[in-house]
Image (cartoon, rainbow, N blue to C red; front, side, top):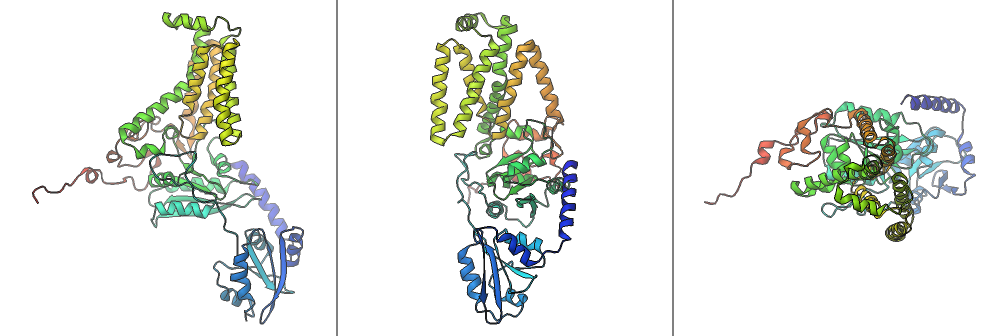
Length: 506
């Protein structure tokens, strides 16, 4: 973060030097007059003549006409303070310098000042309030549970969270990030639960950001995570307000960004990336089985193709006799070694994925299905690959889609290739060595200063109740220990397990 601090300090020094130069109101108007959407005109009130200017693409014409011009023409005010009291609008500001004026002008304010005068001037909010309607989650869709997702409006997203957490302890801190975009960023946490040190870490990292344009929460995610060199995502981004409310109740922190339909939550652990929020809407037996299936699918997706290459290249004695004949027959006409055969199919699968993702929805789905069938069949008939490997690669690709978090799914796709190359080097020995390296790498990772492999390392057996499996809610009375929350209990376990039935004798 020191690099960000150094750049930010230099930028502040340059800004301070420029502020020392006197800038009049006429200078500001002259600068904005070069833009085609800049509008200015004069209007006579009862006592004074006012000069109004604004950016019409940012201002709501209905608000301008009904709430500003209609009252301004009838105004008897002699000063800006009197005019501020007469206008029926909240959050009106009297600005004294060009820096404040630029901020309000670029956020949809109408600026008013008496004609032939300099600062101060009155900035009246009249911004266009347009945002996408609340819709169902597209990435984290669930059959059971709420069907609401975040949109691109920060205020509306905060409303979705507040509606699920109607408590006075919910704290919202708002910041402005981006020297050009001036993007609003909000930190959400529950004061009585969240560890103050965790809030300080997030607050400092956001304050240290020195970037010109922030267009999405993905930028914030990459700029505040603990390690930018790791391919593993260290923070979870979600489009579900109910999931955000749940993690806030656990004692975590959420970051919302204006213009982004997703929220960032942390700190996170590795096992959280393989748990779907829909698990909490199902019976714990079923949810636990689904989690184990996802974990097995991830391991299968990473290791099945490298194992194929390693066994056929170095360890054919490990192949059962009944299966050896099938593999020999399928590879009898293949002119390439297993490594090239595997890389060809894996790259082909990735090409189909990218093509399907970049095309329109219906066309992309057609390309993925039809393209996979046609290319796979043609490759086998042409003798470029074996039908056994085609099935293995297809199953590995299918298994990778079981990962609930999209960013972790991309990581699984990426780390499969180093294992395939390692399998060609020394077979199973190189696979074991690379796996040990991967394990050491995971042990060193942290999420907002908390261990990424919790509760495996450091080991906390109490936190296993909601990791690889999900136990009933009645045994999940304590919040995760690694968060070091202020209030460690979510409820009284004895009271939760008590079931009072109606007295049959009454």
